[in-house]
Length: 341
Image (cartoon, rainbow, N blue to C red; front, side, top):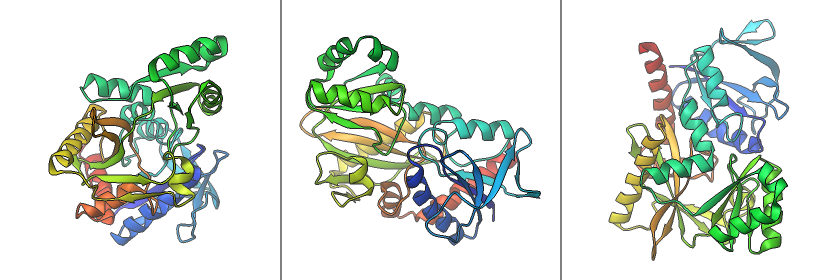
């Protein structure tokens, strides 16, 4: 069995979600017989060897440093030995190719998609461009740079409204977990939404509002798609609070779809996995506009949330694949591939 270095926390605004996701991954790996070592990244960027027996996980403990390009991890004078990294990090500086690039430079094997797939999937604009080129439907949208917004606010608003109309969703291009997203219903809320999104990112995407069901699919190497799941909302939309802080949403799997719809969305998810060049795992999210365009790609998560209310573990379990087995297989395959490359 492998010695798995589980990275969690991070400097992004999804720090807390990562800490919770990492608990599930550690438990799954330990249940499969792997040894786990926690490496917590604090919001400040400092690294710590964390106690994985302490719940909830916290990025604190003995200070640690990873030497590049040797790939040696030290805590004080001690060298921390490990075989593979499982980067359970969400958002910028974790899920966007930066950590993956560092690990590549050091020659350290790691679970999940590589640098290019991670970077592109984190960029909502680039993901939509590739999906559209591959013939996968996407929402109408406009991407705005902060320089353009600062130079011509009125012009930006007019350009956006001409494409998306109202209501519209305003999103930072490179964040997940609905952080920084707002729903704009008029000019005032659009301008405020742009300001909010630009406080998180220097590029913002504004998308048309789609009246449809929210359908998700877990994908692992093959690619192999899980049974789909569905986000059922009582709230107006799937905000950060609806995901993690209140009971206004629930995740149901299998989703109530026809056999044809299930096959179609699984095929689309597998195709998107291949378009981005993913490996290991991903969660591919769609809207289902039943009386219109059918399945419309929303986004791709290359390190999906694994919290108790997250869709990825639920869809895996509903597909007769235990989450523990999936995590263990990801580690085993990564180690095996590193030994033959």
